[in-house]
Image 1 (cartoon, rainbow, N blue to C red):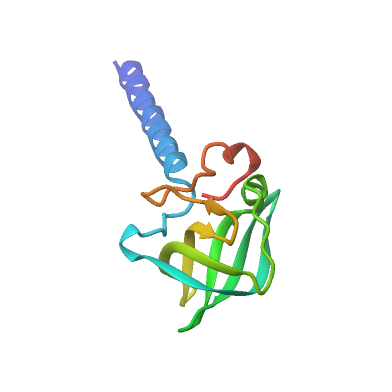
Image 2: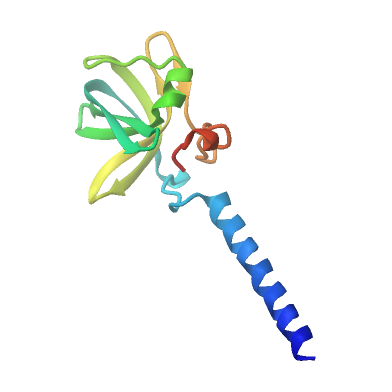
Length: 144
């Protein structure tokens, strides 16, 4: 009887572990920050562009955008995805960004869903704020 009870408890613990691991992977390692309730569109000129490296092939691109009201950081997404989309940005480019205004490290930032340039529109997230690079990027060590 003790063996049967031990086996049942062990199986229950194993199943619970798989459920927790699956849930964590489905949500990514970090909580979602994109908030569809704070989506706005900003227009301005790119002041500077930053490539961010997180090691092991992970990295992303941010830029500072000077609008009529402020200069705000815009977070785009993983560099490999931006390259696949043909995104080429330079300082002084004029762009329109649609995205979610959130607070990161006590500073306002825009998590971009779409970037409009003179000749191109780059989609980065769907209407629910989910990154378009998810799934395909997992094999490349992509960001959540």
